[in-house]
Length: 107
Image (cartoon, rainbow, N blue to C red):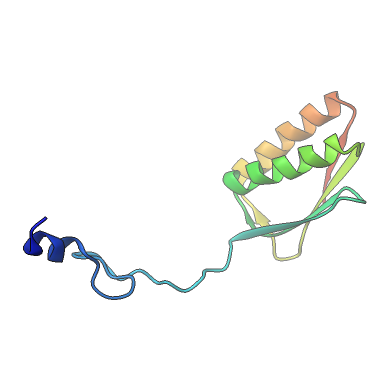
């Protein structure tokens, strides 16, 4: 590779790419977090619950079911929000779990 080519492909400065805006290297707060209480079968959720977050939440719920919980509770913290796609995903999951004898409660 020639020196000229190397100079045009190497980033210049922290988080700066040639012909692009600087990238903010500081950590960003997650838009959604969940904590599990495996003993009680409770998931506490904070932030914005979208389809992607709901799919991740589904994994936690199914894991609690596999541990033998017959009821799994999802507690949306006071500042939590959920979009329509997330609510639909949880509703379908509740139906699936109900067919297997497990109750999904969303508070």
